[in-house]
Amino acid sequence: MLTVDGVEGLIVSSRPSGRLLQGSTIALLGLSILLGAIIADPDLIPHHGPLPWLLPQIVLVFLIILIVRNSKKQRNRSQLMTDAFEAVQLQQWERARALFNQLLRSPIRYPTARAESLLGLAAVAESDHAYEASQRIYECLLQEKTADPIQLHTVRVAMAAAMLRTGQTADAVALIDRLSRMKLPGPLRAQVELLQLFREVTMGHGADAIECAEERRELFRQFLSTRAGYGYGLLAAAFDRANSPAQAQRCWHDATLLVPPTDLVKRFKELDPIRQRYVAAEIRL
Image (cartoon, rainbow, N blue to C red; front, side, top):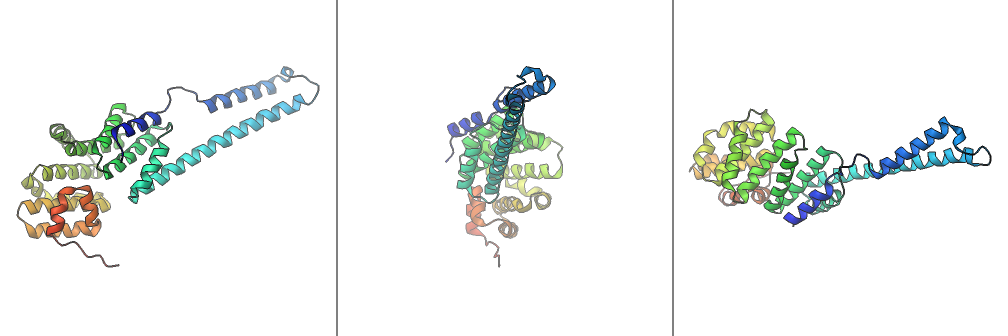
C-alpha cells in the first residue's frame, strides 16, 4: 500500500533538475563544438599520421552513440508510461503500482507528463483507500502549478473528494462550492456534478441530490462514458434515502450495466447497502 512518505519520495525523485543542461546534453554540445572547430580550422590537429582523419570519425561515432542512447532511453520511458496508464485503465493495480514506482524514481522532464504520471499514482493510492497519500499528490500538483489547466481542474476535483474521505469536510465543501460556481464545458461540469453528488450522499443531503437528478443523469451519460455508472450508483443511494425505491432500482440497474457492483462498492463504500437492497443488471454474454 502506498504511504504519504512513499509518495513524497516519488514526488521528489520525479522532479526535474533545475539545471539548464544535463550530462548527455553537455557531452553532445562539447563534441559538436569540437567537431565544428576541427572542420573550421584543420590546423588544430597535426597534419601527419592517422589523427587528421581518425579524430573526426571518433567524434562522429561518439555523437551517434549519445544520440542513439538518448533516443532509446526516451523510447523506454514512453513505453513504461504507456504500460502504467494501461494498467490503471484495466485496474491492474499491483502492476500499475510497480510501473509508476519505476517511472517516478527518475526525473521526468516534461511537466504535463510528470503531472499525468502523478495523477496515475494517485489513482493507485485511491484504489488502496490510501486517501492521505493521494491527497499529498494533489497538494503537490496544486503547489507546483506546472500541470496544464485541464489537469489542474482534475486535481481540484480529486482533492475535494479526498478531503471528504479524510474528514476535512469544511475545506472540501468550500472547494466544491468554488468549483460549482465556475462556468465549465460539459465534460468538466460532469466531473464537478459527480463530486457534488458524492458530497450530498456523504453528508445526507438526499433532497438536494434528487432535485437535479435528471439533469445529472444526462450529463453523466453524455460525458463520463462507463464512469457514468458511478454517478448512477450515487443517484440510486440518493433516491433510496429519499424513500423512492422505484427510482433507486432504476438508477442501480443502469449503474450495474456499466460498472460491476463490486467495483461500485470498492470505490464508494456508501453503495454497499444499495447493492444488498436492489437488483443488479444481468449482463448476458
